Image (cartoon, rainbow, N blue to C red; front, side, top):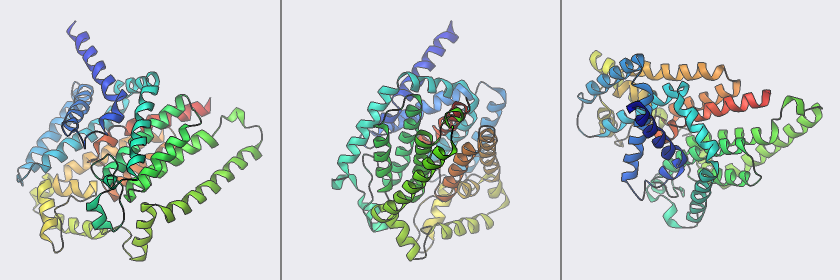
Length: 395
């Protein structure tokens, strides 16, 4: 009886979490406590899936111990606690890909796709309106980047780009369930909002997701449907031409393109990330053996960045270096193993699934990913989409 009640409560939480996920992730700028509630809900549904299992319980007990040790290496602010919550969500999300949580989530998307679609359309329309208002742009990022950086209804341009990637993933599922012609305009609108943020790495991720969406809905067909190779080749050539035209438009008329061109002209393609990586490697190499194993603390890494000439108190913007410096070698091994497991899982699905996981690994290296837990939480949905799509086109 007690188990049934707990199961019903869990199902209710999953329902409210997944069906209203687009709204949850889009109102944090206006209702700050929503972010805390959302993190709590995500943590609860993931913990219910993982902690009852003996192996995973031991794993997360080890992770908790490592995080506590690294925190006490430099207990200055609560930034380490924020990163700890996000890294735990990352581990649990990847581990839960074989659990019933995401299968139930997909069933919710199937059943309530229209409710989710209405939310996405409303969010898109509000963001489009903010394109024409100063309120929709970040003054702080404009000072740094010297371009108009769109942030929409989100707290900053990077958050805007990463959160809209989540909406694109939901649209990919909705269109696979039942495609409508107007869906392409929603995708184009979402892509546009990402590209005018100027956030290059999440924009790259959004472009990859958009390309997959376009190929799945306009190029790829069932094997039995393609009687003549010429039909497929015509579709492919048209797609390539459209991608070339899109690339020209993106590079010349969006903040993403302008920032890319300016970076190339200045010889600063990675926007100073290489010097930040060098700094982190120096920090790690000069730390003690104990700090190498257990980490120096997230705040220690931030403080080291701030201590340098022209430095700022920022995190590494690279998951691998932030983890090895702030949380230690053991935590880095666990983090890398999670990606390896996901790659092995995706390899069984298709080459395309592997490509999307590799894309996410590139994002985690070039700009950092685990801190963006709203996107991390739906990465299993993206991999399962690739699996669903592969099986659909093989039938």
